[in-house]
Length: 321
Ligand SMILES: Nc1ncnc2c1ncn2[C@@H]1O[C@H](COP(=O)(O)OP(=O)(O)OP(=O)(O)O)[C@@H](O)[C@H]1O
Ligand SMILES: [Mg+2]
Image (cartoon, rainbow, N blue to C red):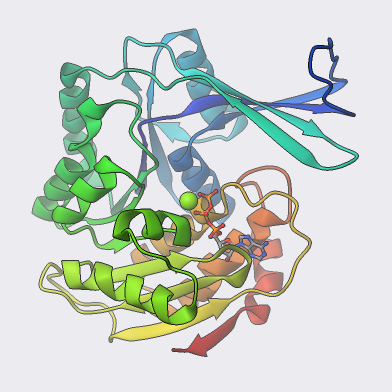
């Protein structure tokens, strides 16, 4: 089972309209609502590929209940819920269909107390015997969680469970010190962390090596339509090294991009699946990139099919560094 952790989920509403006119009342003929949040997206993508996953969102209030209901009933996912006192946020996206422009309005995330954080760690400990891998996804809604991913990675190390961290900011920086098995920054996130420009290929590979030099074995730098740089280096933090050292660029075909939001999460889901299925690194990367690309081809997040991914697989190029 792959456990996905989402400290900052949301009720994710989309209103489909003709045109956004500020100051006016605008009625949407159509609207959609899903459980938002990066780990929720990862779990949906794992399920789309037939994998076994448990989603662990931090939620509160009636909107939090709504998130859990949608995950369980709409998405058919198992949840291990961390209940917090503060109410879960709603994000409202307005999509102007004729021009395909989205405007998103974010409510602030929930506060999380140290006690709630401690309970979340206890829940992770309870689930560890069942988990083959843990993914930690997205930012922290509250500074009380800044050590949370670090502490989860440490617990997982003790249990011999691999971890993937896909985040940014203080929670990500602290997590790196615990040496997760894999990280998946996009270029912008890496740029922010390294405090230097990452625009050309040499700078992108240098950023990948920066993470390896910290002691992270698997680094995936995602580049949107340009695919991802994938790099594995045997590091002292791994007990049983599954792969030879490798560095390559996995490049997807050109597609008509509909909605790339959550493509990074689909990429993470693909790596989580490949790692837990003992797949080789090239096949893992090929399928993970195809999943990211399949996600970008439709509006809904993490709801592509295995058939769509299979069609893309032979079109993913693996280019040597
Ligand atoms: N326009 C696109 N065309 C083809 N593939 C895409 C496109 N956008 C995304 N992808 C695929 O999805 C993967 C991840 O995308 P991206 O780098 O945008 O992730 P991200 O910035 O972390 O996204 P998010 O955080 O919203 O999930 C890419 O490596 C690529 O395989
Ligand atoms: Mg991302």
